Amino acid sequence: MTLAIFDLDNTLLAGDSDHAWGEFLVEEGIVDAEEYRLANDRFYQEYLNGELDILHYLGFALQPLASHNMEELLAWREAFMEKKVRPMMQATANTLLDSHREQGHTLMIITATNRFVTEPIAEALGIEHLIATEPELVNGRYTGEVAGTPSFQDGKVARLDDWLSAHNRTLEGAWFYSDSHNDLPLLKKVDNPVAVDPDPTLEQFARDNGWKVMSLRG
Image (cartoon, rainbow, N blue to C red; front, side, top):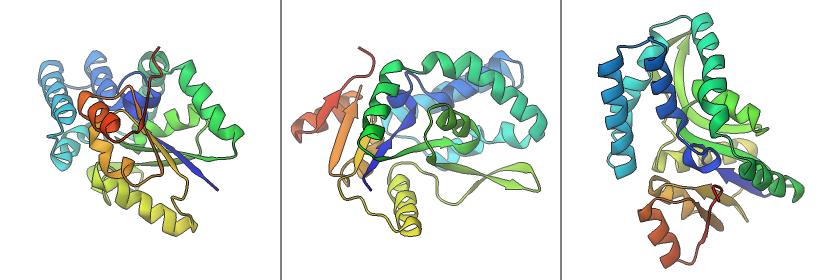
């Protein structure tokens, strides 16, 4: 069965859920506002520039999960979904997802953002298969460490290869939609790469290589 794979942030969503989670923590007074906002913005710019040290960033991003119990975290995440994520959801993205469902494709999100943040977003979009960066969980509490390979840049390819082997599937005929040049390693591997509201680097590469370029934002 054909895979239709989607990046999440700035692709299906009109915004970045990882960065928005950091903003939410600041706005709710859960973290030190000035220090955390500056670091959150700096890491996001490094990501946009293609310069992000993913492990350094995750050491920062996963610390709030380790600093609080699961009950608090789940309550905050529910509020985050309503305040930050739902305004980023796009009817055009749902239409695109439905078009692949109608073709009988298997839908998947693959994202560098961690599973704690992205799991309810995948559920809200009706997408069963999610590959996300895995925060380490021990005895019901996050440790602040990463479990396994982060699904970022070449890590997306490695994590997807593991999933394909485990499910006895291939990338034959697969689609992958993304906005970011950070996803070029995976875009180059699929038969149907699509640049969605792409950054300038990805847009140029896509046009040079005859890939489809589209917008979900009108």
